[in-house]
Length: 291
Image (tube, rainbow, N blue to C red; front, side, top):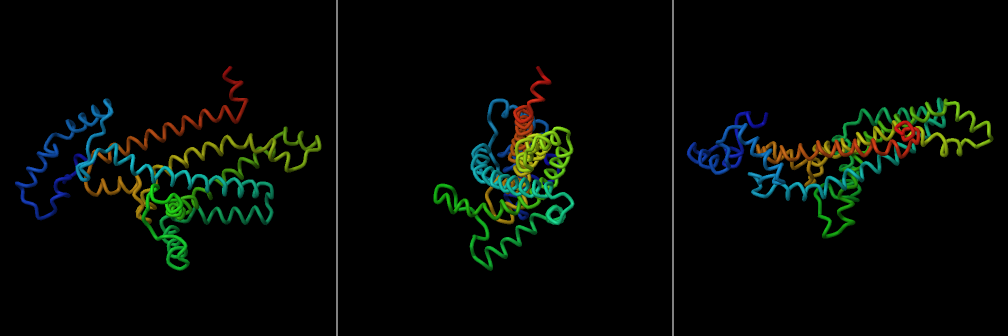
C-alpha cells in the first residue's frame, strides 16, 4: 500500500524545491523507478537469502538499523512486562481474596481508571512530575548501554511505567476473574476441608490453575509491548524500533517499514508459540490429554 501511494523517498530526501531532473536521477539511483510489484519481489528474494536490503534514508543496512534499535525496544518491553506482571498479579490476587470487600472495589476502580488512561498522556504526566518538577529522571533520550548501564536503565524506567500502567490494569482484572473462577471449584473446597489455610489454598492450588488464562493475556501483552511502543518512544525520544518505523513511514523508506513489520509479526508468532508450550508446563492435564 505504501508503494502505490503518491510520493517516494527521493521526494522526501530532496525536498519540495527539487527539480524534476534531480528527482528522476535520484529515483533511478535508489531503484524507485521500478514497478511496485518488481520491488516487492526483490525484497522477498532478499529475505529468502537473508538480505534485508539498505535503507534509502539512512544509507545503512536495514539489519544493522533494526539490531541497534532492538537494544532499546526489547529491554523497554521486558521492563514494562515485568512491572505489569508484578503489579497485576499482586492486585488481582488481593482483589480476588477480598471479593466484594473494600479492597476488591478499590482495585477494580483503580484498574478501570488505568484502562481508560492514554499511555501517551500518562507519559507526559510522568515527565512533568519526575523530570521537570523533581528532576529525578531525564525528560528523554537514551545514553546507550556502553556508557552507563544504570543511566540507560533510568532512561527506560519512566517509559516502562507509562507502558505498564494500562497493561497492568487489564491483567489485574483478568487475574481477579481467573482466581475467582478457580476458588469456586470442588477441589478448592476439598483443600479447605482438609484444614489448609486460605494462604496455602491460594498459593498451592488456586494460582497454578488460574494461571492459564492469565498467561494467555501476558503473551498477547508482551507482543503488544514490542509492537506498540511507537507513541511512547516518540514522547521520550527513544531510538527504538517504534520510533524507527515512525520515521521510516515519514521518510517513505519503504524497505525499512517492510522489514520491521515482518520482524514484529514474526515476534508475535514466536511469543504465541512459547505461550502454547508453557500451557503444558503449567497445567499437567494438558500433557495427559495428548498422550
